[in-house]
Length: 412
Image 1: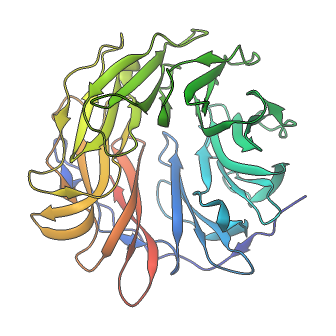
Image 2: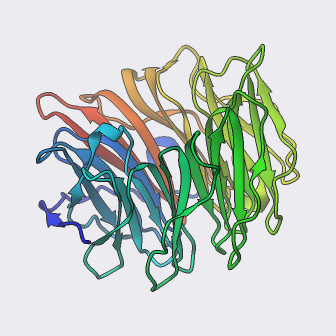
């Protein structure tokens, strides 16, 4: 079964800036450009180390809505494509992934309530397959060799399917006990190790699949009350899962899986304080992790390779307000970017997309507003690092009277 793919027109040329070796903020990022038509909602980004990237989003159209996507090569954006009709009532962004060869994957739930996954190899057309029925909340990941994995919920049970390089998708397989699971996440290392996490009965649980082997036994990571989990991996297979846990004050917890290990280490507390958002996590060189969250201001904590967490530091400006979770990405060189939406005092903006960057060996720079002065209610800031000091931040915002569109800024 194939989904209909349709072109909807070319994009304008991107504005690219050349980076000095120690530049930050405004010198790192281009002016924003519109990527989608009006009415865009829910977006997701992914990329590879060569500089390729994908941005996908949902947009009204037809009887239900459509999933659209744009591929970026290191030089330019390709034409926006309609990948297929979507069930917008599922309320989630499309899932995206990109392997080390520049092949992009996009997954979404269609009007038939089935999971559709489209694949775009460099120089080829998009092609979509249907993986499973009664699907919800899909997530995707891919490795350096071209293998991919999809995970999703089917009636409260976590199901997975994988696609070997140049192969076809496997039949769905249940990973969790029947019923009661939600908040599924997936991470995949460059070498092909896979970790799937989910919440069941308030506990964060995980299953690990070393490259070329089956999934191991399910491991319980957290006590009861866990929520809003995230997981990330470095190229070697070091993986860190984080989540919010109840307490007085509230606790943000993490567990680390070292490359080659069949299980996660014991859960540790990252910070104890009121956390007002979902956390986010990235894993940099040597398994060192970075976690961001909002506690009135955007905050950051980083761990050693052994999993010892340092003190939290404030990222957002003094007196600025924050209206969204803070997303963090880090690459193998140690370049790091944090993105969020909030009001800025200098320049004075309301609900603007802001970023803070750190280049390898340097310090975290001051926050910089990416969204334009005419943009209103900029939200869903999603950062991505690709290639040497390159990256993309995508978000949604309104510029009257053109409607809400996906916009992007490039880092070069």
